[in-house]
Length: 71
Image 1 (cartoon, rainbow, N blue to C red):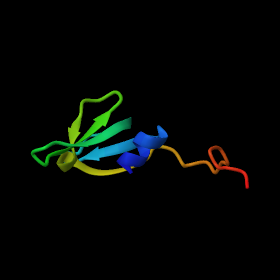
Image 2 (cartoon, rainbow, N blue to C red; image 1 turned 30 degrees about the vertical axis):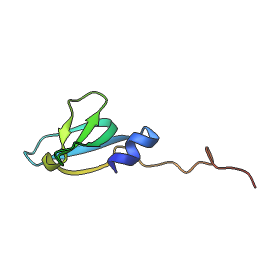
Image 3 (cartoon, rainbow, N blue to C red; image 1 turned 45 degrees about the horizontal axis):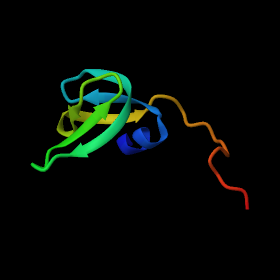
C-alpha cells in the first residue's frame, strides 16, 4: 500500500502502533544497508515500518482509463 501511494501519488490513512494516526502521501519506501525499513512521507517525518500498525487508502479509488493504452 505504501509503495502504491508513492507510485500513484495517492493519500493514505496511516495508523501507528502507539494509537496515533495521520493522512499523508508516501514518497518512498527505503531499506537501509543495516536492514531497517523506512517510509518517507510528503508532510511527515520518515517513519520506521515497525511503528506502523496499518494503512489504507484515504479515499476510494475511482475507476478510470487514465494511463491505459488503447488497443
